[in-house]
Length: 338
Image 1 (cartoon, rainbow, N blue to C red):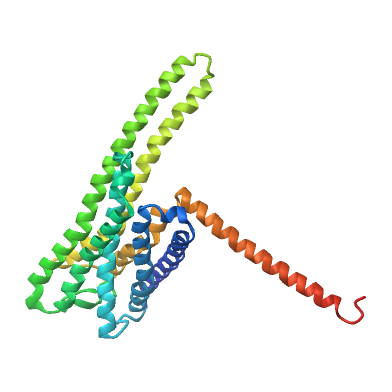
Image 2: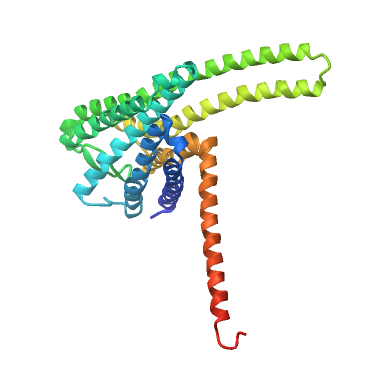
């Protein structure tokens, strides 16, 4: 194993560690916080988190083994199962992000009727659709024997080894990525740009009201006016930053892998021996970044994390105090202790 392979293996191992810890923490927040569970987006977050955890404990270790061993990491049946999961989980993750963007769009554009438009039942129907949509392509690939170990990505994924199926496989691959990556990207862009437009409109209204109020308050100190205007500017910047992170992480993580899969269909364009694995690692890194992008940086999740940490520290303090009490009691009953 050369230095490139060692670096890719280290990158994949670190991605596994971050993804396992962060997604487990999100799952604990969902389990322990009733306030989070009552909201409709919790179903989308739960679906995304469980998929990320399954990818972390099944697909990432097999890919890591493939990078290290430079050969199929498992038998043919297990590799086909892992390839089925890889295709399903990637599609489900993309569609779950699109569902979260739809939820944000409804919440911002229709704030007064949000609870009527996005109930838990409606969220469950959206999750069911993402599952059916995500299962269609790996099921078809399994029936056509297009699942197995792909040496370019050192992982179990979509692949076709028969030259006579090249055109059919190219059409299938292009359709698959158009109805997963491209569809999700279009939904993300349309919904979040609409959310950004509405947020900027509200910021402008608040800014106008603030300016009118500041004009009426003639005795207000200039520094207070300056702080109010700076707060309006920061509010606009925060909205733009959040939307950029949502769309940017999606494109940065998934686009290199999708483009590589499409370029691979053309025999005239060579692909570097390590680029395939790197693009696969970038796709896996979405599982590690999702908890921070969609969950852990929000107020409710931070509050839940603090409560979980306080419970752990409280239990440790009780356990240590119990040990000290038991030790002092045992010393008091020893001969000559009086």
